[in-house]
Image 1 (cartoon, rainbow, N blue to C red):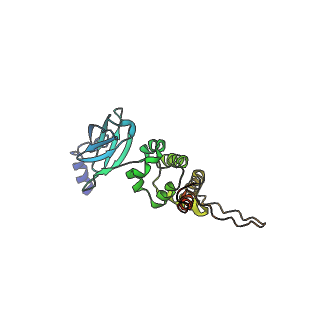
Image 2: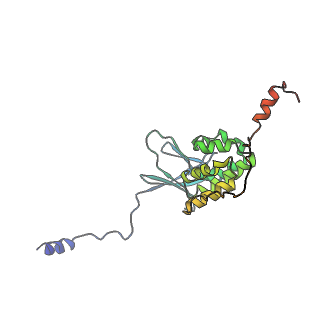
Image 3: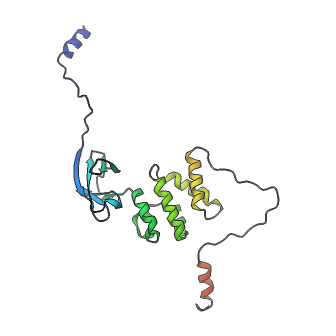
Length: 213
């Protein structure tokens, strides 16, 4: 009986759409000089190369995807609600920062970095900062800061690490190989004093000499 009722109902059913309906809308918006667009009074980052250019915002209830006018994805954001005023995807900006690393400390990106990266970058030379930012620009395309920070912590166990050391440990971690054990030499190795980076010890020395050489 139920099967007969179902068949009777089926005769009156409407055909379902062949394609899934996306509940989205598009807005054509112009980025400001920093590459940010405004959607419903919230700011979303694009990329430095789209500063003052027109882009497409693909808006759904939970996402704002920013596209070129050829519908190529630039960045994807979680949609903002409430009091949060701005969403920034930093990866597109890192290559630009690598060209001017001395300005890094004055960016909101620096303030949002884990404290381990802030300390590391503050102790880097300018070329090291450039290399580190270039590495992050590659890593953050496919990852967040969790594993890069773990790699930095492991690489820093024996002092200030090179960018290549961080990179090597990062790829060991994401490939499931973990950290390689330190080779223990069989012969006697004399203790070496810890090297201090920076010019702080020179500044202390010149304080005692009145600043004269």
